[in-house]
Image (cartoon, rainbow, N blue to C red; front, side, top):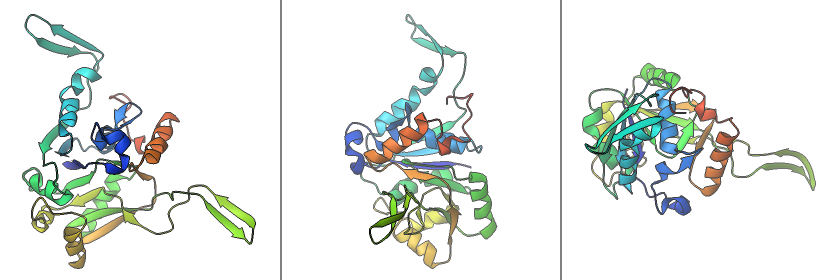
Length: 263
């Protein structure tokens, strides 16, 4: 099943990192968050990706063009001919389509520009700045079971601050980073049928506004509730949290990573 990755936004809330590179190229443990997301999908057997490029998309192209050479332990260069060969361990068996979808194109517009890649069957889509340990097999099975056009993964992100349960000035309970009390939010990790493409108009279409609203009103949108780990990378604080999890060896989104291939 093909996976579309939305990787063209400006990432203004993480401007200290994104002034010089697109947000999906901000690194966790020495690899772009985009790579982490793709490794998660590949862990469930989804190895064909369509990356919707926009802001500084050239950097993402360069990353993948050089990926095989940089990921293998030994590279031989014939200086006279310019021939390059790599030997030893080979990186991931992925097919990656890299498509310029416009500097200012909105999320729905980016998907519409990639319609020719996904018009022939069920496909998945997510954002290039959020990781999760959502079980993609169960997500797809849920989508197939209800027979509607679209499924969104609903998540409950950690609250920004800890909770204090108090009686007058006595703290009865202290909970660090509880789940958000506001309820469920859009966590990405969509599964779509090609019919969703009919709800998109042009570059200015914001997927999360009219298209999803119309799908919901028509009874064509279902939510897969994922109570487990989910974390976006909106701010420098979010990046620190993700880096700490990776460094500790306890990154929930990496549960299905194949340690023999580029981890």
